[in-house]
Image (cartoon, rainbow, N blue to C red; front, side, top):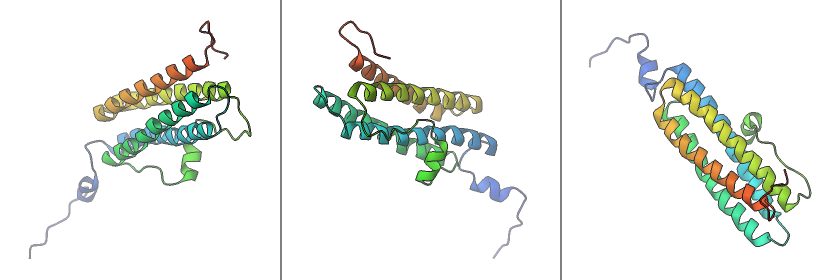
Length: 177
């Protein structure tokens, strides 16, 4: 049996999953984890509003929010797996999400349907802004794969913003906020 001599750095190189430096992994993972925390916060808020929707447009809004919640949740696994692919560590708990999320919870007992839609519009706008910040970090480190999927998620968030904005406009195309 041949015993090989260990060289400094062998274990570190062998344990890295990607070609990115540890600093790049930390930066990219940090940005993606912040986005993932916002995904979970937005998903729960969207489902909350979906469950508590009322009023004359109940069916349309209820279905819209259910569709959007599904789309938002579908992103979560892709973000977490991307973090793991590059060698990072992702979210581990509800507490971790709470520490990183930038999208505020809404625990109000009653929110009008238009206020719900306007708040979700603004939250999706904030989510897209976070994706753009993460994209810039990915560009800085040459992570084209993460940047590429972020572009799709930005487009999806902007589409949700568009739908929510148009749903709250009056007959003359004016939004209340």
